[in-house]
Image: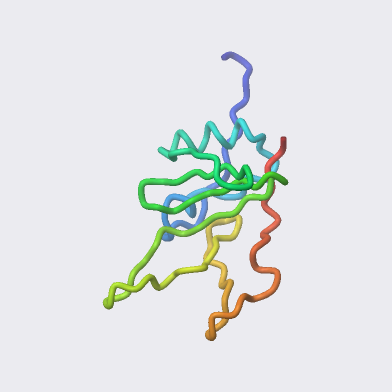
Length: 120
């Protein structure tokens, strides 16, 4: 429509799947985010707890929690032995990988919330 402004996030860092290729979604409405992510080819489903999950063809994901927080998961990567090597990792609001577990597999406090939040 004429005069209608489309909200699009900035470029992300990339390299960790489609979920890392765009920047911060903060401030976009749920509908704008839905339109944008579907436009990137995301398949959408509601998960347990009424989260909305956007899964891309490379298996990276964007999850919108009921409190509007955004969670991004990188596309899986596997080592030469077939084991997943980036299990448990999250992406920051610019698409950068966040270490969420230490070398012993323990969760690192305050790494699951990035501050990325959509509007209702």
